[in-house]
Image 1 (tube, helix red, strand yellow):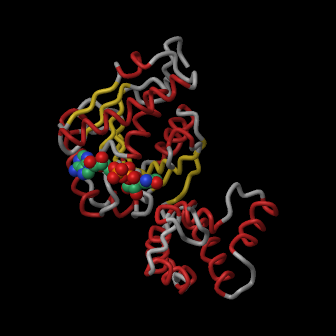
Image 2 (cartoon, protein in one colour):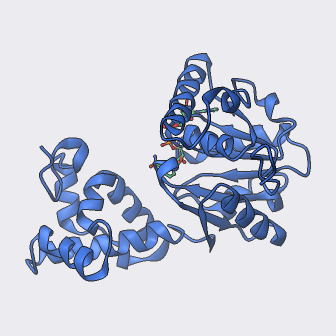
Image 3 (cartoon, rainbow, N blue to C red):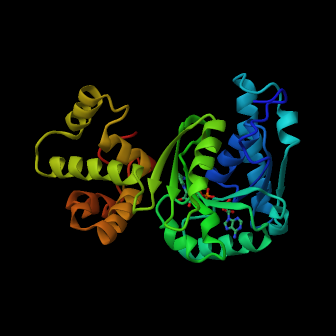
Length: 288
Ligand SMILES: NC(=O)c1ccc[n+]([C@@H]2O[C@H](COP(=O)([O-])OP(=O)(O)OC[C@H]3O[C@@H](n4cnc5c(N)ncnc54)[C@H](O)[C@@H]3O)[C@@H](O)[C@H]2O)c1
């Protein structure tokens, strides 16, 4: 860290494409570490929403005593609707919705505006990083930076390396993650990376155990919480993530990694009944 709070290992000028839940959190993380941040949104309304989200994250950091005041941070933030604002950025992190065609078209549109040496990253939680890289002009300058939700409270970032990624970028990305005050897990691009693949594998087995009547959801979760010190059991985590979201990931992992990720019938039945977990009031547990 230098005297002005800037970590020299971070790119000085960072861009974030899409200022939704994740993009706003990512922008906040870079602002807190001293970078100058541009967030680009799809239209003026979305830009106003993005600005609100980043400003409220900054306000919370000030309340918690993690930043001296909001103004110096917000002075380093610009929110716009113009991709040309990425032209002077050393790193741009894409955080638009998880739709393949949208990711490809947005990443290409950003890349067109970047200097040849700039690095482009995606915050995708499931799409193939090597596949996205193959759609770009400079695939070697591309990697995955998978932040977790909510970004300020999560200390993990998965650094996902495509087949094409320049080797030095791995160490550079580790440095950026450390400068953001988080811990990097480096993963070679593979479906579900490390976190979703393992998390979903445990959850699917837990569901099969409920289905077979091995134990109650409560007891299965307690086995992992008390026996293995998981902060939350796999079924409660599934309720929090959303059963529909987990079903989508299981289907994707089954199609890429094989039958061991096939969704148990109990998961399909619950989703069909609208028992989606916390957001619907019922999943493997009652949330009322
Ligand atoms: N929400 C999570 O828990 C979570 C966790 C890790 C990773 N992710 C990944 O992060 C990405 C974003 O997810 P999110 O939850 O923040 O979504 P979100 O819907 O909250 O935000 C997406 C933002 O992108 C903007 N956008 C859409 N099209 C755009 C375009 N063409 N140009 C610029 N901006 C555009 C939208 O206006 C919106 O603000 C996805 O790839 C998702 O898989 C999400």
